[in-house]
Length: 283
Length: 310
Image (cartoon, rainbow over all chains, first blue to last red):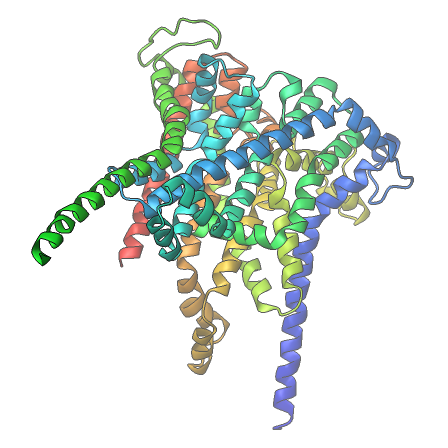
């Protein structure tokens, strides 16, 4: 009797664990299957797809990728996305770290007003603004330009990034900047040489969140651009569909190509990304 | 001697310190200036321009934007498409809130409970969240396609052919299908935050609960749920706002069809402006819908402020 009880409990624990891993496995299949289908479908011929879509290609049609790349103009779109994402992230890092530092460490008139302002603009949603933002860009002569789109991306990223940087700076010791101030260094110099190097984890969190945000942005790209040579990849994909009505396997190949940069980056910088996103939303 | 040498330093030091403080004040404003200027030009100005535009008529090219009073609002209030989209997006919001957040929380607890493979499962579950709304739309358009897609094919092979449907064109299932795609794409985000929240709950609390005889439900009720409360507030709100602002996925999957069965407000606003060239009515819609979203955010801020005080 006494020997039976622990073993029964152990069996119960084992059954629990099998059930748990079963659940985790099913969820993993659900999360991965659509992506797997994109890969598999992108390597099939139109005939294979029309005869009812096989789970695995019978012959691998690598040529689909060449067709997608050439017909889809993907090189141009990907390069544009790299430009927009790079400029947006750098711009946001500069503007938001300056502002976050000012709000965390400097005393000046109207500090509380500006803090409230930044919190308030965060709750203005894109659907309330994109129309008027477009009109503003038209009036400024910035519609259908790279600069206009980049400025919109930077502005969209500022409030949240400023708050992340503010809480990051507020948690840092003051000793170093005080020492540098006594040595007579200017504020900008202290900021660039003392503060920023220590702020790397905060900057990384901001860069990761805003990098994904800028790469995946679609609504403003749709509204701002009608010149195909300026479109980022997300906008380019939908333009490819409406202009060329590509065959399904070609479209899948184009979509597959479009996710390679984000997926590779995600798998490489996985830990920083996970930490950055948690920090961004919860701080 | 001692008095005369002390005197200048007494009066001099505060003056220098005072000047330094004034300069620091200017520095603070200068550091903040780029952020404030960008926000003022590209967020606050358009916000008010949208309100102004909702009382005007504009075709998108003409330099004249005559005032039309409340005509745009009268039009929008009578517009069946807009209200159909509001009803649909409420479904996105409610199902996303309960089912989406429920899946996120449940899976975070499941991953937290196992010892091996945590990183693997976390990586896989968050993967859909790094894809763009366009990509997700493209993937599921293909997967759900009645001719070339794999889903119906698999249902037939499993002997469940009766369940095969034209998922995105059948009015009876189109909305639930698109909502399911939204949950597939979005649950990883809440999952990630819940998992971070679970890891911050001290283990001693669970041990103490065990000693008090708490089983799974008791631990959840008295340790996990209260411990996660701040994360739950943030996640629920962000999921809800993401669901209500859904646009790209719907545009790619169904473009609002069949009929208005999957139409959502952001897509109506976009179409009204950029396809129908009726920017004034589109602005009135964005004021009504955007205003509702702002009210929701304010309500949430109030609630979480009250909870933080308590």
